[in-house]
Image (tube, rainbow, N blue to C red):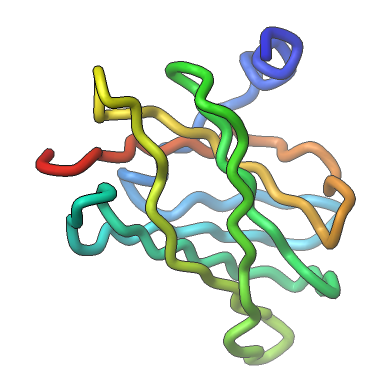
Length: 133
């Protein structure tokens, strides 16, 4: 994980808990937003929504532990609508948590089908709460 962290440590950080994050990649605008949902036995549910003019066949968000390594978790996004050339992709998920410290800082990256997109020009992070938090 250290090589991965070294690559992202110099990037500007955008905290999805604070509001939407915007960037441009390959000449196309992107916006990501994260809405917390209800808390359950497995943790808090989140709704991730991504708006972009980029049009991959499939789009996948990958959760990577930022505060501690708990693995990588794929979150498949579904295209829900297209308006004026802007595609909206979204997914609902529960972020994994550590039983000794249920609050976890996660980083989001994206893949198209089975290959990575160009590296993001920002580090997208969010703090997820475990159950009962």
